[in-house]
Image (tube, rainbow, N blue to C red; front, top):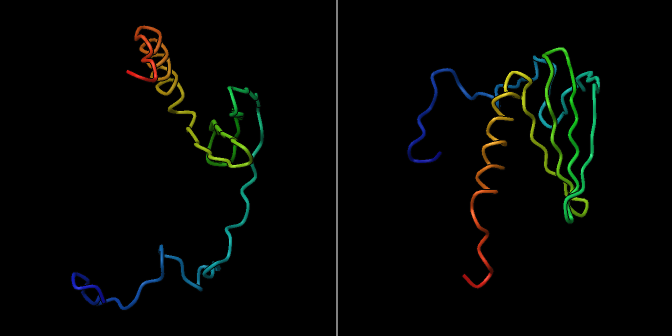
Length: 107
């Protein structure tokens, strides 16, 4: 036991609240959620490939942005309720980048 941990009056709890009685044992993957692809676009920038995919599942719509660099993939998901705010922030970053001169490598 770590020094700042105290025994719980409820006993030991399973990691992340999963228990055998919920049908999800440890190490078992969650069942796949049905996702429908509404639109998908790919863009290549230098050595990176970005895939923008608008999808929908029972919880709602979302934008999945996947970056692929030499087989290594990273993904972010933006719920559709945040797309306008996300776009606004990206537009601000594009504007800031255009207004600021780039630094040379030796600066």
